Length: 571
Image (cartoon, rainbow, N blue to C red; front, side):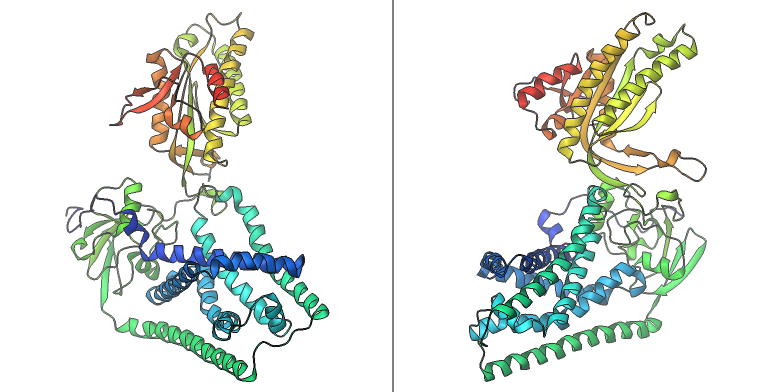
C-alpha cells in the first residue's frame, strides 16, 4: 500500500499574520501577557511600601493613568474575558492525563484565582465605580490590613504562580532562555515576596501614624458585601461546573465511539474518538516522541499517514507553520498532537521515542535542539594537501596543532564556540549566548585577529614553511538549529553542540568562494547589517551559492584585517 493513500495535501500558502495571531493559542498568550504586565506593575507598586507610603501612591498615580483610562480598561477587560474563556475551553477540551504536572498546577491556580480576585476587585474598583470611593492606598490599607492579609497573600501567590508558569512554558524553548534562566528565577521569587512585604510594612505604618474614616455608609457597605457573596458563589459554581464537566467526560468516555489506530503496520490500539493521536499513543502506552509536550512547537511527534488520512481535517495554520519550518512538504506527514482520528487510521511514527540524550537530558536547551539566530564562521587552510606532501606526518601534526590552538583561542576569546575541526578546517558559532548583534560583531573582530595571528604563525615558522600558510574565511548570519547530535552512552562525542541548517551551508559556501575570488575573507551583507556596520560606502557583490536559488550579497577582502578600518569607520 502506498504511503500517501488518503493523505490530505498541505496548503503551501502561508496564513496571513492576522490569521496566525487570531488562533486560540495566540489569543490566550497575548491576553495572558497583557494581564501579566498588569499584575507585575501592581506587585511592584505594593513593594514600594518598603520605601514609603508616598512612593506607593506616586507610582499608583502613574499606573492607573494607564490602566483606568478608557483604552486601558477596555484592553484589560477584553484580555481578562478572552483569557478566562479560552482557559476554560482548554480545561474542558483536553484530557487531564495528557497535561503535564506543571500544566495541572497552572490550571489549579487559574481555577482558584476568581475566588479571591472577585472579592478584591469588588472591594476596590467596584467601590470606586459605584460609590465614588477614592480607592487609593489609604483606603486599601485601611480595608485590607490586617483583616485581609492572608487573602491578599493567597491572591498574590495564585496570580503570580499562574502567570509565571504560563510565561515559563512559553519562553522555555527560546534561544536566550538558558542564559537568562537564573536571573529570571530570582526575579520570579522576589517579586511576590517584596510585594507582600511592602504591603505589610505600609499597612503597619499606616495604622500606626494615620486615622481613617470609612467612606462607605452602612447601606453601601452592605451592598458591597452582598455583591462579594454573590461573586464568591458564582466563582464556586464555576469550579463545580468545570469539575462536573470533567467528571461527565470521564464517565461518558466509555460510551463514546472507538477509533482504531495501527502503528507501524503491526500493533493496533483502540481509544475513544476525539483524542489527538498523541493522546491515544500515551493512553495506549505506545512510546511517542514529543519534546514540546504536544503544543505544536516542535515536529518530533510527526507521523507518516499510511491509510485513513482522508478522514482527517486539513492542517491548521499552526501545524502548517511547524511542518514548513521543519522542511516537511510531503502531504502524508502530520503532527500527532494536532490530528484527532474519527475513523480507522494507520500511522508510522517518524521520530524514535527512546533516543538517548545522555546526561544532558532536561538540563539545557541543546539536549533536544533549539532554533536561533547565530553567526557561523568557516576557516580553511588553502593548499593544505600540497603543504602536507613531502613532509613528515609528525611535522604536519605539529604545525596544524599550533594553528588550530591559536585560532581556537581567538574564537573563544571573542565569545565564540568551536563547533568542530574538519581536517584543516574550523567551524565556529558566535552569538549562542549573547545577543545576535554581539555575535556578529564578535565574529568580525575574531576574523581580524585570526588574520593577524596567521601572519605571526607564518613568521615564527618561516624556516620550516616553504611558503606562508594562507586561509579562507566565510561568515554568515541567520537561523540555525543548535543541538547535541549523537550519543553519549559510550563516549562524549554527542556532548558537543553543533549547528545545522541553511545558514551553516551558506557560511561554508562563502568560505569556499574565497579560493575562486582569491580573497582571504567573504562576509555576507547579513553579518554587516546585524553587527550595525555602515556598509553604504562598501562595494557589495551578489554571490551565487550552490544549492540556493537566490544570491547572497556580501563583501570580499584580500585580508580580514581590512575589516578593522570598516568597523572603526562605523564606530
